[in-house]
Amino acid sequence: MYTNEQLADMVKPDKVHRAVYVDPGIFDLEMERIYGRVWVYVGHESQIPQAGDYLTSRIGRQDVILVRAADGKPHVLYNRCPHKGAQIVPPGAGHVDRHFRCPYHAWTFRLHGPMLSAPLRAGYEGTAFDPADEAFWLRRVARVASYRGFVFASLAQGGDDLVDFLGGAKAAIDNLCDRSPVGEVEVAGGVFRVWQNSNWKIFYENLHDTMHAAVTHESSVVAARDEYEASMAGRDMPFVLHIMAGNGEPYQFWEKLAVHAFDHGHGYMEGIFDPGGADRDPTSRAHHESLAAAVGEARAREILGMNLHNTIIYGSGSPHTVFQQFRVIRPVAVDRTLVEIVTFRLKGAPEAVFERAVTYANTINSPSSNVMPDDVELYTRVQKGNRLDGGDWVSMHRYCGTDRDIPGGKVAVNGTSELPIRNQFVAWKALMTEGGAGCGGVA
Ligand code: FES
Ligand SMILES: [Fe+2]
Image (cartoon, rainbow, N blue to C red):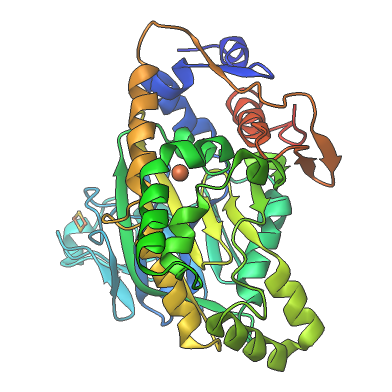
């Protein structure tokens, strides 16, 4: 067991001790002190449109059920029967009529948790069994809040409300929804699941790691360029090749990007791909026209001109506004992380916009992607390397000490800065040692 002082000593302004990635004891503390405290994304309201619709999800180590109850609201319950502890529903999505029934001994529960009945009640006469007693209900998690259809839950009674917690990252959820002519999105299609044999923090760190792109992804960059030169030189580069080749931009390109870091470990990058330009291609033009018809030309330009890449909501994952997806990051063990990627349809937008998002997911996130396996290989190598006694510290020195203040956070002076990683560890340290107090501010 570590003292708070020992944990605090593991995070310096410009480096972090390798133990935070490989020590199971620290992982246990993270589940309690980080995932037991912050708001965690559990699912989208469009996945549970009717009362009785449910979806299993996870907060740290806790398996939970996101369900729409009779009151029309999303509720989040622990997936545990109070009789003998059986999981009430199997993993996945489903629907129940009016109540949950445990598959073991048929205790039943209202959709928001209270107990309804148990068979052969006479057997409980004279005992402390009481359906009105919350000890016999499906337990609800401490707090649930929905922001524009995105449902988050927290295992902690106290702390910031959801909007304050999201801080600067809220703009990404707003922009994702605002891209729809009716201001709403819905989960559509299936989910990609990716197991990573690495610590959950490594993926968060990589999301804004611009220095790795051209190096780690060299093979797919070269393949995309070769394909273009061989068969279509002189024409517009097709979307898929454009996405793959984008990683190969020179260092000067990444240096000019704006990288924002917000309180609580969140952040986003600005300006990698620009599919929102009104004049770029037929899909973008049609999207722009449908949005302009709903909100006006100026507002449509403003919305589509907000070009964010890989927003980070620390503890939940990474929504992508321009390509309408959410990569949900679930820590499972110190060296095991599950990433689930869902794609959103912009309600009221041309179907081609959704098809483009699916193409992006297939290109970047699918098991057959030419891009993601490069990253996953490097995450595994980082995990393996940090088990060794070849050195104790992980460097995050790039542009340390040069960040500029913005409301609710900092912005890097250079897009290759390791500000986002330092920012994540400010939040990590505050949560692990101070209960999250002092989470604001970036060292
Ligand atoms: S374990 Fe659920 S009814 Fe027995
Ligand atoms: Fe990458």
